[in-house]
Length: 328
Image (cartoon, rainbow, N blue to C red; front, side, top):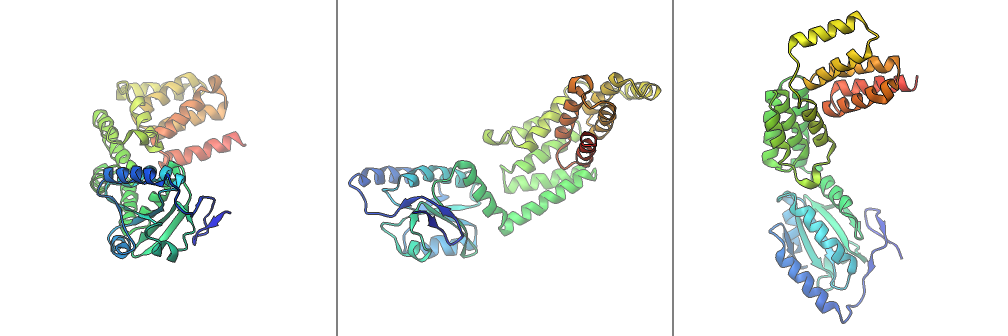
């Protein structure tokens, strides 16, 4: 029978039942896994639940994993949720409780099927799920929990301030804020990518690349990271000299329908990090012919959007203008 959690989660995990004869071996495996866990993960009992969960959550969020030795999905979920917690470097703790030996608080919370996972913050349960969810959903659960804490809100506000400073051209202030966030959250992808973009804005491609290398391998495909890498690739060639820009622009103004020259000018702007100018000229080409040069201009435009960043005003405006051209 499907089970309901107090938070409206409908799942079909293990039903609680009497331990089987093979439980001893499974329990030994679980005990060994627990011994390998770091300081951010621990087992607890009904006697210590108040201290380890309720009181501890006043200082930082605590995730409680209700499990039992005979539950197969519990064994699947355990390593995944431990990995998610440990990767946050102490921002959140994981407490595991065997409901066969410690049924009191599981009963109070209405746990009837396992695995059951509850998140506590400021002394009370704030979220929950049941069943062995995939790793992506576990990470999303942890991120949601952290974003709702006071510290999470402060980080979010700081990132907004850094973005605003960057858009205003105050690269130094933006870099300082991003660096401060990284001190608090060493694996914060948004902050690391933002700092790398600050280095790139100052023409320091080497430090931008080195900064991106701080990001864990499993997060390298984040859109913010890919955007900075695209910008670095565009700026790989030596930037055009001012007189080259002037000559190319003069040629375009003299012959507005010379889209090959206009495309080359857009590429020069992109290599110089002037994505807004590049986007403007590519949109002029697309305004003349959407599939110009077998889609070459559109493909380059999408690369410019990625390099500039999803929240950059040039990208936001450019996407809106492109949509108008496509659906006119």
